[in-house]
Length: 179
Length: 103
Image 1 (cartoon, rainbow over the protein chains, first blue to last red):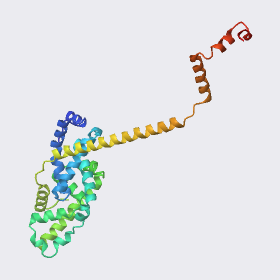
Image 2: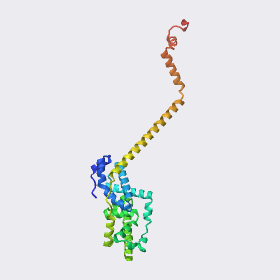
Image 3: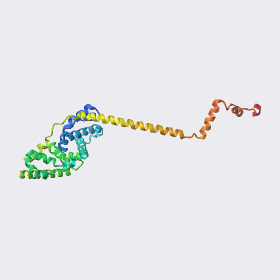
């Protein structure tokens, strides 16, 4: 991702509101997309996390040391904010509690169109997995950058992603066979 | 691991399908202003408390503090000097004649 110029970032760090507006305009859409999926399509939750993320960006930008890309720094804040939000709201537990097998059995799966199955599959993975899927598969963030964002090693993330894809694929195949 | 094309296409489409981002900037700035105001109020309250506590402590200490004897003596000596009460003693000390002459 192409980054915003350093002069604007430094101005925003000094609480220049015009510059901060530019930072917001430049990075908020990506944060919105990833967070919307991370909170499993809950618009109000996504709005809350995006707002809180940019409040933290505004207050902490002065401590940004240019050791990484600003996007990585902002996504890390967004990732942590989403985790905090979900653990406070307990929705993480609810989302994690969805059982894919329930979708496969009985009449439920017949009501699902192909794309709906995919969305149902998405809701059955954890917020962190959705964050990684969104970041890696849709936005094309490298594993190295994702490692800096999540605080995990890139090798661990590769393994996690590989297993996640296999799990989703197996469930998808299962659903299609029973259709 | 490579997923089957149909699945991968559907999956990525579903993943990237998000509603338009609502306007959040004004809310962000409003909440920042509110937090700043709250922080300023808290700092002001903390500073007031600190000043009040320091003043009370200072007054208490001032009340209880006894002036050392040497200082009292020195102050009394200065007071006598200023009031001219020690003139007689001065004359006696520095005169060449005996003290008896004044009697």
